[in-house]
Amino acid sequence: MKTAIYPGTFDPITYGHIDVIKKSLNVFDKLIVATTDNVNKNYHFSIDERIDIINNSLFKDLKLSKKKIKVISFDNLTISLCKKFKAGTIIRGLRAVSDFEYEFQLAGMNKKLNSKIETMFLMSDVENQIISSKFVKEIAGLGGNIDRFVTKSTVKMLKNKY
Image (cartoon, rainbow, N blue to C red; front, side, top):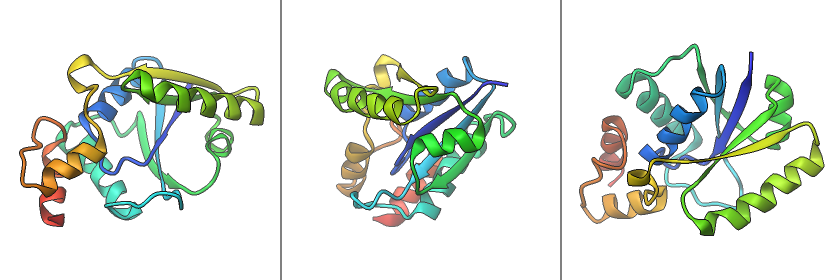
């Protein structure tokens, strides 16, 4: 069975992230969606809230398979997760050329830390490439409509925050 890790903050998960998840499932038998509490970032949602949002979006709203996707939190290196779950691939989403430099460096560092781990870059569909969690939060905070960017349960969680 081929397993991959899709790490991210998912604060909150968007349709762009979901596109990457769906595309990953076309290549891998199992996908670990892993959200982190990186100390260098300020989060809108707690780690537990993000886990709930991801689970509700993927399994309640979209009815994706719990047999193929596992949602977890982590606070260590992504390559450590790969070892734990016997995953040979890290999935990274790209929205724009500006994402590539950071992602390229990150992939290189992961390769130096464990040469057996590959990084696969996937792009969301064109209509979702402009979506970012940052913009979704900003639009929601200003009372804008975010229905086209996130699932129903995520819209509800964001409305409850504001």
